[in-house]
Length: 429
Image 1 (cartoon, rainbow, N blue to C red):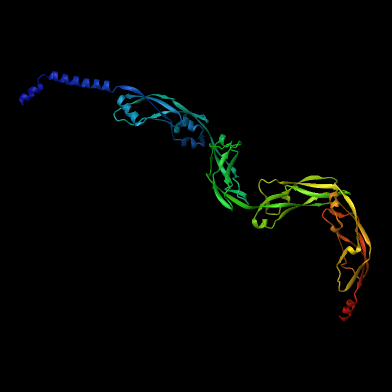
Image 2 (cartoon, rainbow, N blue to C red):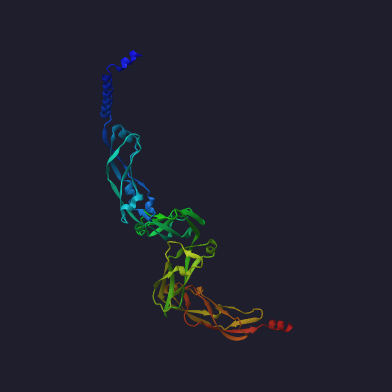
């Protein structure tokens, strides 16, 4: 025991000195191998407490620009600590919008960039440099406005069909966003593809806001991401245009014909309604007092039956050309024997037409007059309501189209007598 004690106490001073020297050398080695230095870091700005702006009914205009701001940072600390920071990626640059009111002018706010470091036990680091030190936030009032939804047809309908009414449900939508951006919204539009629809349908479509130039606006929000579009499909039918005239031309002139351009139109409607329509009749062409060919425009919609409309894209007007020529006249002669008789009972009465040669003047276009033959005209008298005796009866004529009687009708003398068997029958009765 005494020997052990003597070993411990022998040269005690030198032993203590050696221990102190060893400790000092350890600290020297630490300072040489793990010195205090600075290290650069970089990252993009993160935003915290964005609701602090939204709660003031405002929105950040340059939000994406802020998020893309790259921040350069220098941190001072021990080399090993800085190396661990670099490996962990725990250095974060951020702005806190909860303090925006400290330097807020109403439209802009300068917000300092802060650095968040992970906790490192027993070690201390400090931020020596941040660039940029702050960012400027630009804001605008958050507003809304209600707008009608415009429904636009896309694609081509299948043959025999047309999309009629395209109705949005709901018919209105609310646009939200910065006041300057909402003011740009000229239209909220929904495009509907009708190329595959052949019956009434309901489609779910995406509404999009557009400016006055037709550019989509991504800086605003809509109260609904989809709307339902009700599509009413109608049948399509091609029908001819039929025309007739009213009034009379000036004396000595005749209507040669009326042509329509186009001479047929596509109409739409319910199938049972279209099945009853074979043509569209235009009967309002007045030629009163006319002496030469003329054209006139007619709005075809005025002549369509109820429940029927023109196919979309069709011209609303029909151009009518009425050809008028100076009339040609011709005197036609015929015998009373050429006249057929109707309107009497052959069993009870006899009819005798006085033998005579009759004549009348007919008129029409020069071309129609050249083509006219005597065999094209038929003559008839109607004795309905006449009693026995002698009568003067006007002769009716059936003439080819485009030709008419000019002046008075010819008159034939007719004798009506009662048959003997008629009197006997009446006596027996």
